[in-house]
Length: 91
Image 1 (spheres, helix red, strand yellow):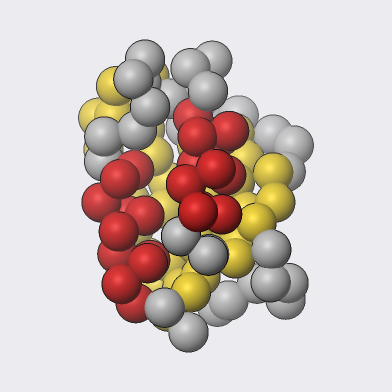
Image 2: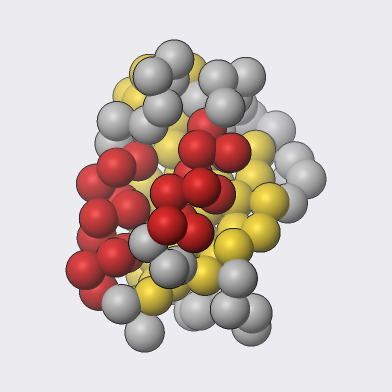
């Protein structure tokens, strides 16, 4: 299982980014979570097969229609201890 943590910056809060990530991740069969961060970015952990994780990472560079992605920090991470995709509160 491949796992990455992404921190997405730009106009990414208040534009449906978390919901969009949750839908796309579920469609791709990924596990993980997404949340807004206090600094205005969105953080997500995506885990699954390599092709699905890479596709989600690629999709996040564009985001939903109203979003403007300026940058993405991407790191390898440990997989979550659950097999679904969750939305967490701001942290």
